[in-house]
Length: 304
Image (tube, rainbow, N blue to C red; front, side, top):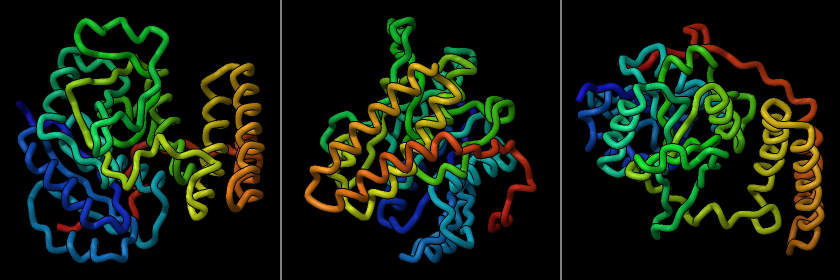
């Protein structure tokens, strides 16, 4: 099988997980044209580790500052699209551990679909085997269920495969979204362009410290509340661009109820409430610019 895939891995201060991620990718090197590792200015030895890696398939860039996950993916997808030799970009976090057959399963389905799709996403599981990072199914999700594909409209950046032509036509992820929701926007943009699918046989483990489906605004650790503010802003933006006014209103009401519910949290009640309300309001004034693949977006060249 041709080496059709350029992988983008964004990492920040999770060296042990990055090593595991890269090992899993190198085990399926037969499908990979390149592995583009974007180091978001780590301080835990990641930069030094990457500097000592000399596998010809691994390309690495250390950013001069931590630009956030969303901007890291924007940067990485841009680089992989321009510098990579494959036909697809495979996006993942540094705590994503794809099964050794994950890329082969994605490529099989890409070929079966004659490469006419928005994106494909993997079957993401937590360390105990339970589902996590669950994709949102489309209204016509059963259409290709007989061949093992489930129609989806959005997914996370844990493990998605995108044809480079789609990136060139629709642009890059929105780096200005900072974190949480940038993947929803980008995959929604892609699925609005062409039908997109969940690939059951492409399995990836999301090796977080706990299953993220347990997170709520009311219970999340206090030092991560700011992420919810970004998420509410980003998701209002998504609704504004891809949904009806009725759906926007539903989200505003839902966000408000979640903010009110957070007032009964054990700590940081006002911060939790404010994240929901202020984030929602910010979503109506948020107007990030979609960038398209360009050498001008590169901050630095990859190391040789």
